[in-house]
Length: 292
Image (tube, rainbow, N blue to C red; front, side, top):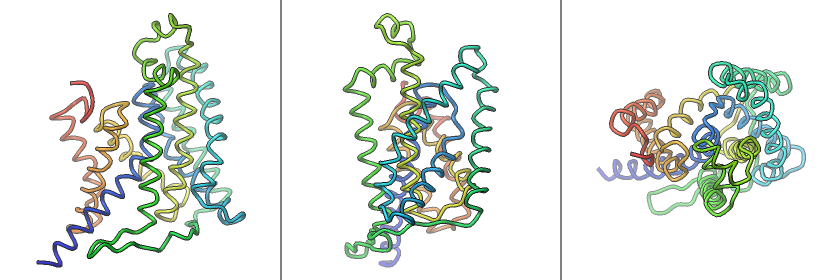
């Protein structure tokens, strides 16, 4: 019986830490999909791109993956602004931001994956850091630093974004742009410019998400597809555009997946996210923190 409680405690802790990772990789989609109504299914591919940039900086320069991701954030931000400009001119201004816009991001997903395969091949890549492979022991509970460090970085990232969105003019404009563009124009703010900034910010988070991913596990170019469903499920479950909701939903999903893998086997865990999503849509269609 004691062994069962120990196993349960470790599964709960691992699930919470895993949820922190899910929150970090979902926050960008919370901005693009939740606030801008842009279904950027290519976001996981940019997370993998962030993983490979962290890998290059770590293997060639010896930089910590997190530090490398922070240094790469401005480049991701500018890339996001450029991608949104193309999307805006080609689709949104013409009212073709439905299936054609979705096809646009699917094409970016495919191009990014193929480019990574051509450059790096299909072998798994990993990084080295002083905290990888070390665990903190609190009685029967193990806290692996390869999960604990990303968990802390995720909380800092989401806390920083929450403050930016709630305390700055640009942040409040981002939250309002999908709801009332006319009101923004009356406040002398260009909705297209605000969306361009927001999408750049969304993609900048993929840099840190990629570093966190490669700290937790080795990566290869197509592994991002494993997270597409989870990311959008968490975004919807938490309430579109709600950082707090995404964090709670990510924690809940991480715990459920960890418990399922521990007691029933890892093959069942992918079904948990979609089962949780269906239950949430049935009983709380607006999400956990969405508007009732």
